[in-house]
Every structure is written in structure tokens, then in C-alpha cells.
Amino acid sequence: MTNLKKLEIYGLETIPIVKEGDNIAKLIVEAATREDIGIQEGDIIVIAQTIVSRSEGRIVNLNDIKPSPFAEILAKETGKDPRLVEVILRESKGIVRMGGHHLIMETHHGFVCANSGVDKSNVPGEETVSLLPLDPDTSARKIRDEIKKLTGKDVAVIISDTFGRPLREGAIGVAIGVAGIDPLYDMRGKKDLFGYELRTTLIAIADELASAAELLMGESDEGIPVVIVRGFKYPKGEYSIKKLLRPVEKDLFR
Image (cartoon, rainbow, N blue to C red; front, top):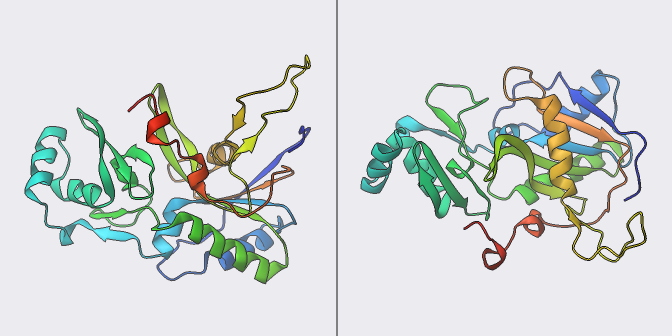
């Protein structure tokens, strides 16, 4: 990764509403061509989790959910719909924190986030919610491989979502799946401006790229579920988002 003088970020505005079974890579390539942006070698394609989940059928109708007794108890304590709480519990390995209206969970992937990543935003239907992809790294890899098949271009793919942070207000974009990019840039051993050797510096570049994309995506009706980042020289390779997950024994906040 080198020092940057310019970074280009393009939001794709003509991606149609994604349905189960849709080929997201094809929709991205078509939109990029239609909007005269194209796909270039080394582009980073940041994709909102919601469209990946919709394409993979990770949508649940709450009318089909029967809450467990434990979900009913948590629903009373948090003021949430007991059916929603049941889905949150099913998508989690355990409760990390709870208080007021909040349920902070650890998902089966190992993410610590509100409501196990279960979301009602940008999902059609009042009684439907989206779940995180079962394996976001695999989802990212399939999209990356298909884009290369369609265009001949080697790109990186990041699947993003919005997470809150324990010590700051507001949500930011974070990476939940990667393909073709090392999500963590290791600067240990390099020198700073004054010649001191860096000993602990690790940069979560996948999260930084996801946050940059989030500025264009937004959370409301902007309709930009895919962003192309161009001009960033990233470390290439096959990695997993698990590289960004801090082990429990090193977590000072749990």
C-alpha cells in the first residue's frame, strides 16, 4: 500500500431492486457500463449486505416465526417484537450486552453487533427482515470470480454493513466479507516520519474502504447499494474477514 494523492469513489445508481437468485456481479457490470464508469483492473467493489442477502434468499417473514419463551422474556425487557427477538437469537452464538432497547449479540460468524445484524431497513415488506449472508467471504468470492469472468478484470470485493461502536455515537460502514484483498494492512517494522520503527500499527483497510463507500451509499432512499473505489493500491490475495476479528482473550470490552 502506497501513499495516495487521489482516490476515486463511484456510486452505482442504476442497480435494480435485487431479488432472490439475481446475479449481482452481472447487475454490477451492467450498471457500471450503463453509467459510463466501467470496471477497471484493481477496482474495489463495495457491496451493501442487504442486496447480497436478498439475492441469497436470506429474508425472513416475521409472520412465519414462533417466538420461544426466552424470546418472549427478552422482548418484554427490550420492547422489541418477540418474533424479531427470536430471529436475532437464532442468528447468534450468544448475548454480549443488553440494556434498554439494545441487544448486542455475537453472530455465528463471530461479529459483535446489534441484533445479530438482523435488519428491517431496505427490505421490501413491513413484516420482513434481512439476515447476514451465511458466509460473507464466500459470497464476496463468488461475486469477484463472476466479475472477472464477465470482464476479464481482477478486482477486490468487500461486502459491507453498518455497525455501531461501543465508545462512540453513530454507525459506520464495516466489512463483513472480503475477496481478493487483505483486510488488514500490517505496518509493523516500517518507519514513521521521524525514523521510529512502528511496533503495533495494524490498519483495518477493509473497514476504512467500507466506511468511505458508506458516504455514498447512505441508509435511506439514495438507492446506491454498490460503490466502486478506484486508485487505492491494496495488498492482494485470498483472505478471510476473520482476520479482523479480535479474539475474546484480547478483547478489553467484553
